[in-house]
Image (tube, rainbow, N blue to C red; front, side):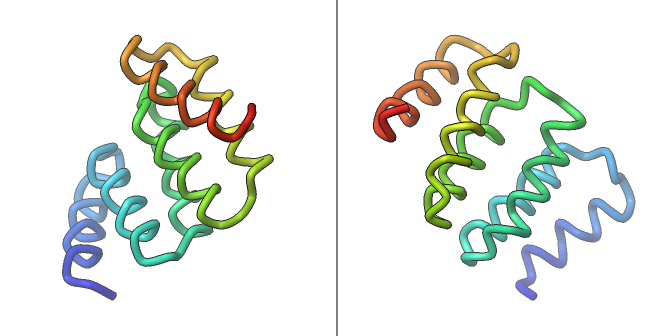
Length: 101
C-alpha cells in the first residue's frame, strides 16, 4: 500500500462521504493497475454524486486499460446521460467516439 493510499484511506475513515478522497483513491488504484478496485471506487463516487464527470471519464479509461471496451462504452454513455457540464460532455463523447461508440 502506498503512502498516498494510506492517507486517502485515513481521510475516508474520518469522512466516508469525501468524494474527492474517494476519487483520489480510485485514481491511485487505476494508476497501480488495480482496475477492479478502481472501478469500485469510481462507482461509489458516482453513487454519491451522479454529476461527478471525472469519475465517468477516468472510469471509462480504466475499463479500456482493462480491455473491457464494451463496459467502457457503457460507462461513457452513463456519463453522457448524467447532468454534467459541456466541457466534460465533450471529453467523454470524444473518448466514446474513439472507441466507435
